[in-house]
Image (cartoon, rainbow, N blue to C red):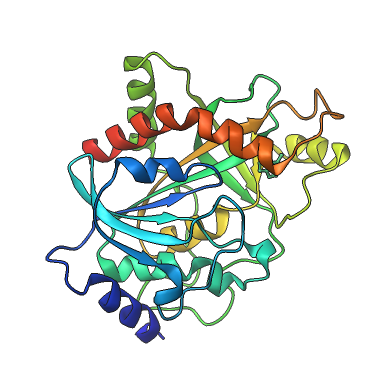
Length: 271
Ligand code: HPA
């Protein structure tokens, strides 16, 4: 069952004299972080057997291997979304492959809508928990016993120590860091005003169309997970008529890039 992951991993590692220990997934408009990775190798997704091809504007579709924060990393510049029509197996394929690359810690980021009325556009939230609101779970199907158990405990999915360190890093660098719950839904529609209210009532602080599948798979296979949401459109329940465009999401995400870069670099340095 793991042959296809091993094959892709072997291809990715060919010609490299190390294995990355940190995996990074860069969300919409957050690909700029890739610029600070000192790259040794860049591989287009289309050249990796088994990888789907990213179709969203602002998502580049390449894998970068290099150094960040003094660690060897593998970064996905562009991810695969369920709303693009990919199966959950396809969406999470790169995360499975990362296991065979040697990745121990996964850093995920996303652009998200703010549900918590205290959040403002441009805020960064460290994720301490999630709600899977996708109509599917990536672990449905035969369990890959070699990688993880059939019924994974999800009580400590987001590493508390890394969350605490993130707060410290934000304080040291003079910016505010929110902490809360991310809810992931299929998209591609953004939420109706009633849906924003519902997701807030369910207990979420940010809402988006990614992350949850990747995190479930990473946790299943024993990876340490650190997640960040960039609030690209704030306080929806308080401002239900404010419209959101993909361009706006990308612009806000881009403007937050410097803070995100500091946070992710320092977290990786601390590992
Ligand atoms: N909802 C869902 N996904 C998003 C949003 C939102 O408001 N903003 C950015 N991604």
